[in-house]
Image (cartoon, rainbow, N blue to C red; front, side):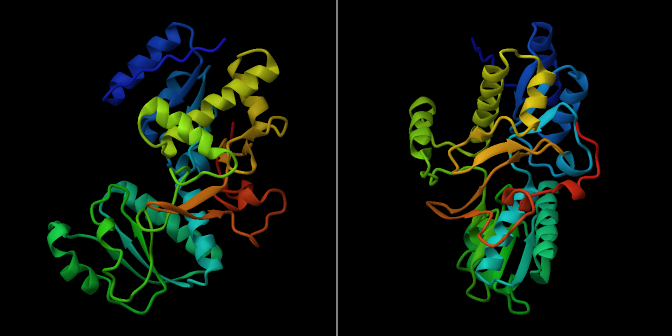
Length: 314
């Protein structure tokens, strides 16, 4: 038997209290949609539990600050950036202009893009910080062409997770070039345009139940619950450590409606999965792209591979 007990709160302190209350009631398996700082607090406060990260794309949690009792069903920013830059290389978009927003999340997304650019041999012709605070709905036509004037580029990469300015970049750049990143052509864990490999049925079931389209956080939470159900069904027990050991092995491939069997990386607990590249209303491509090989698993060409992880996990 499976039972889902859900709690929604509006502060990190309330989240920690709610999780401790559930823990006192005997719960040991948690799916968490929260920022990285809250996830660290929960991991430390619930050491005998297994947590699934369905809300934070923070790369440090997957590379240098691993949490031994956390699995990541949401792809990190490095996975998303690698998926995007692989497609750029395939299309021969070799020169990029990078525009970075003002928030810490924007800077983290930009770091992931720089890492992918260096990893796959793309040239960064210029980088600009967005510092305007005016209303882009009124001045995009005037500001954007001048702001994006620099050495010639093949694509404009944008790091604007909050959506302060990125939506006004397409069709307003100095050179007539595509926009990609947090806006334009976007890498994501899940999107409403994903319909192949049975995904249309999953989309319809979710829409009927939730009254909206499924997004990447929804898919990550669903994938976490599916992971628990698959592992419990195989082991016939719900011990958190036993479940984690099984999920980190190669003995339990998971079906995620993405055309490949999914599994968790034993070196950082991140879910191996193909990454859709989408525009607002259509699927453009899926990474890893053809030709990007790996000694063991092509999906490990996305994100932090074993030699790149400096923290000890689990």
